Length: 252
Image (tube, rainbow, N blue to C red):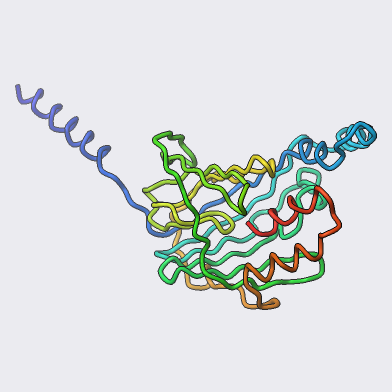
């Protein structure tokens, strides 16, 4: 009987620990950004006359290209910035990946403000504005990302661009990759079908986060989101069907 009670007690304790919800307030998340280069090529060279060019480029490119970013967070603040380097051949070419691909994004959820450094051609813009208000719709669908169970949410940005997100309520900071925020937990996955691009967390590290790790960028031409979008529309007014996709890539 004593043996049975001991085993039962240990089993009960183990189940109790598993049932406890562990909340994370600070750490570092690595995101892998993946672009389907073939899909982008097909859009850029749409039309029967250009198919031969798309096929020629495909022979010298990987179907997908990846780049990595790190997101440091502590409490209500986060900083998203370029992470580890990858072999050049594994990255999408700049003309496929678009502009502003090395963004540094600071978010302060307490004040609902953000500061982002974005390089667009020869210009460095310091975009300072309120955090974007997104109309998220949360579902009961789940998936596991970086070892954490995440719930699915969807929204539409820039009037017509559909976005799928996955967030974990175990990570209390309500930030995410690029400028995506506003869900009740950290966003660990983003998919934007019209850009053929995804961002998924590969790992979460419970590291000490110093003030310097989440310091906002300071250099660049000060501008807000509306002003940046207006400049981009003027710059790309003669770009035809590719104008919108380039603007979307920069504005996210």
